[in-house]
Image (cartoon, rainbow, N blue to C red; front, side, top):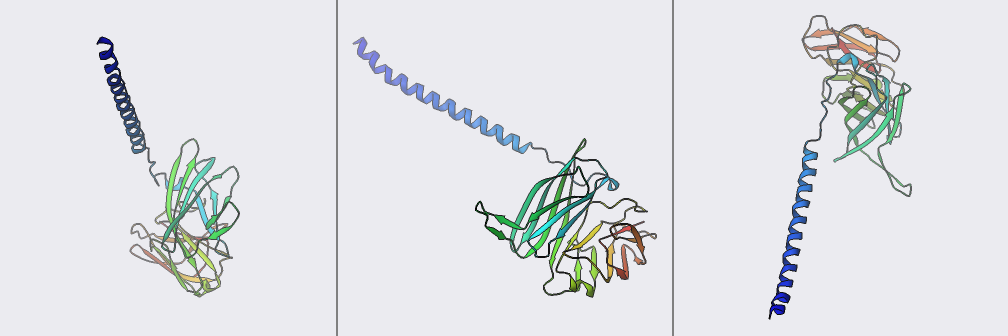
Amino acid sequence: MKNKKSLAIVPLLLIVLVLAGGAFYFLKTRDTSVAEQSKKKSKVIEPKNIIALNDRPYVQLIPSADGHYIDLVVNEVPKAASEVEYELEYQSGSLLQGLQDILKLDKLPARSNKLFGSKSAGGAVTYHTDIKGGSLQLRFLGKENYVLKQDWRYFDNKEKFTELSSKDGKFQLTSTDLKTLSKIVVYNTPGVPKDLKGELASDAYSLTASSAIKGKGNITLRANEEATSLKLMAYDGKSWQEVKAKVDGKTVTAEGVELRELYVVVK
């Protein structure tokens, strides 16, 4: 009888052991999952656009003539960095697309050419169309990392328009000479080239195209604050020139201005 009782107890013990093991596995898996979620939640988000204006790099976005590529060009980096991680987001039709990479900064200007589209393992290329622009995040890596994020706007000039503006609407340009340009980008570049005289009083607006920008136009640029000494400055790729302009509160306007690659208001 004792042997029979012992034999009857064995299956019960096995069931208890299995249940205990299962409970232990469940609790361990749950704890691991909770820990992983906690790590994700505690991931450090670096603040953006907090470094001094004078320490910010001069960056351009330059479109290709066929509209399939864009160049990221880092011209000047006042605050030392060895490389930059970048994320370029853009609207393609109704879809939000993106691309990212790392660009070494051992030699300036540094340039990265990227495809508006995707490429399969077999080499087939799908081009994104109806590009409208988006945002560009730059994470500069050095002794002290810093992150910058600005907007950009893309124009496919099939209709030969004569007016354009930045994404924030603070920079506006009217010119019949825009008709000669196929693809155009207006970008709130984070910084400006050196040797600019005066204190920055507005965002800097980079104007680039798939071919050389030539001609004249009328410009309106809105400053960040009112000041009686506001001046409109233009950069031609080599030096700064002051542009004769009218000031009305925060609004600075100029007519018959030579088209340049960069505009900003100083005080």
